[in-house]
Image 1: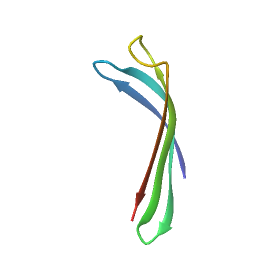
Image 2: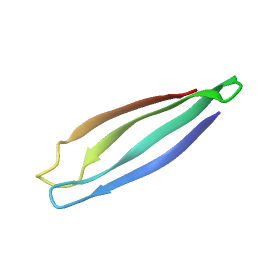
Image 3: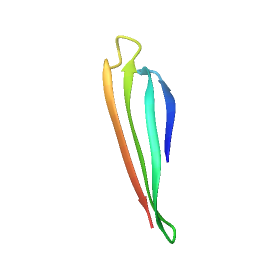
Length: 60
C-alpha cells in the first residue's frame, strides 16, 4: 500500500514544503511495519534548501 502526501512545516525558524510517500507492510497478528520517506524543500533563507526525511515504525 503506497500513499502520496504533501507535508508543510511552518514554525518560528522553519518554513518548508515537500512530497512524501508512506505505506504499511502487514505481517499478520497485529504486526506491521509503517514507513515514510520524502524530500522537504526550504521556503525561506532560515531553512535548509533540502531535507531528506525517513521514518520507520514496527508495531507488534
